[in-house]
Image 1 (cartoon, protein in one colour):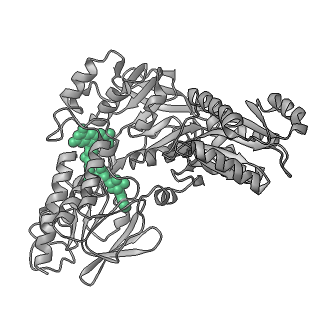
Image 2: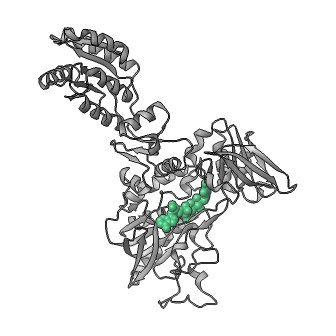
Image 3: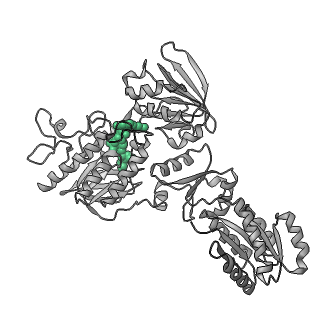
Length: 552
Ligand SMILES: Cc1cc2nc3c(=O)[nH]c(=O)nc-3n(C[C@H](O)[C@H](O)[C@H](O)COP(=O)(O)OP(=O)(O)OC[C@H]3O[C@@H](n4cnc5c(N)ncnc54)[C@H](O)[C@@H]3O)c2cc1C
């Protein structure tokens, strides 16, 4: 983090240089001395400093400047750095103006020119200003900043994307003072939000995920045209394939449409993954796996959705949403599953504005002291209930069945039983959601009695069943009736190999109906929907990739 700035502005170049020189001599080791020769240039410099999240300790402005005098400059500077100490440099003749400025811009001091010797006239004043500023400095925010509205689906999507890609950021509301100051510095208005300000000070209004990825240092463009192994989907299965593939010398690319970690990245605490007796959060596991993949030189592309797969000679070509392609000797499909949407009137419009799919852990602190509703009876819903109970005043779990026993692991049921603020409502469905700019009410139905009731809440988290993400495959590889990719023995109908199969051998265990294209993890028909099995299948697919390549 650079040192806090002291900014001096004077339209006379000789005077401007002299002030900066004197300031640098005394404060240059602890403060950055920024010099400008007009109020407008000085304001530009302040905007840049603000966007980069750095601090300004003292503003030293000459009074008599054309276009914008020192008082006008200090007034505008207060919109950006209200806590910076303000000093006006005046000639004796302008003393009255300086006295007026004490009220207008809450001036801390005025200094008469000339200020020689600085040891007597300048430094004691600036020392006092710095001492006062250090007692209540403005806050440095060096990380990425997101300025948005509380109940905006687009603001949520941006925060969720950054959080899931493990990019640290600071969230600021547009209608709070610091959020407003950042918008001013970026020359933007509240209607432009969400505005993302990168750590190097670039402001992006309503960025797409691809824009965002490129600006926060996530790679989006492939370095090569051709790879040994292309892995589609960076959940546990894809990360597993990438780590094993790259570590075993295959030129490996891992393509992810949204954020590394997949479903596991959303898990607040995975308690049953081997080697983590105290549990591990999805974010931690993802971060380690991603570092491991990069360490072995796997290439990771984010915000690239694969929309087509076809065979071209001995290579497989993957097509991205923007029409560009990459090719590889072998492919691992690890596209997992995504949550089914809850079908009740009113909910679709409120998605991201109180209705969330998955745990949306970025929202947890906002639920402090509130009542929240979770739909679903599987482990993912149970984990979310335990996690949100640390913030929410009350957590309601709505399930269709009589109890959690059939769908949730016993260790989670025990945890839920031990938390008094969690209540389970059996045989209960959401039949309607209502609200203005965000969710305000839910109508619930007791399936046994048929009775309905309306509850006030702003929070609904949905965890109901999941569907494979395979529509984009079309007929390229065989899938079962639910869309899961068929592999290995499942492809053999009464001992016959799948239609179009060209090799004199049966498909390998995780191989799809297209030779050299494998499936691992939740997307595979018959897979066990667990982190450990996804990672295991990702690793196993790589050993089959080697076998396939050796026979080519
Ligand atoms: C909240 C939650 C908690 C869970 N807790 C546990 C637990 O405690 N223990 C446990 O064992 N399991 C748990 N699970 C299940 C576990 O997370 C999954 O079984 C596991 O993540 C499956 O891994 P995967 O790699 O097969 O698929 P996913 O994790 O679904 O990852 C697939 C990835 O592919 C990407 N993708 C999809 N389509 C494309 C495309 N066309 N182009 C590019 N990328 C694409 C997706 O964006 C996604 O990142 C939990 C799941 C959830 C949601």
